[in-house]
Length: 118
Length: 112
Image (tube, rainbow over all chains, first blue to last red; front, side, top):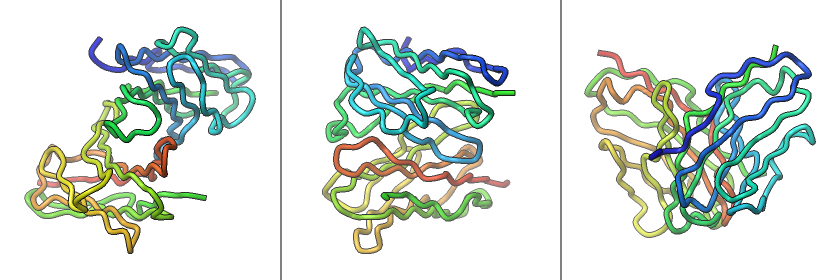
């Protein structure tokens, strides 16, 4: 596809369940970011990949959050033992350049996966 | 800690009126500044960016923003808004080579 694709668009989970959110970046994009956007807030950085390497995971809120990009394209964000505070929209973004953002300065965002934990 | 502040959570404005959405950030050392827009049920898209050079930058849809280093601000302006400009606007800052930090957003509501 032409843009960043995320699935599922909506996910309802019971507290304690594990969830997996998928991101298909724009083909050829080197950088991939995950952000968490709580209701009424701006996106907050979770983690960054350059190709298959996870270079920054400083934003992951706990060890229940895990992300991977094994072949440098599709990425999966996994949340184990979900809690109510995990309810948010999870945004994936990709960029053709590296994390310097000096070349293009633009991130291309998907529409997000809305997670609701009951 | 480095932060981005958007003081106005909502800005109501009449169609064809001018608008300014405010953005302030902490620390002016080596910053790159962005405004993103999020239309309902769509992903964020880039409006404009400041990396270096002229402090007045122009973006899509008639928006512009001015980088003010002394005031650590990057306010977004449009001289005449349209109904179609109704959306959520996010200011974002990158310090050095780190990932973008976003503000909490300003909802622009354009009324006829």
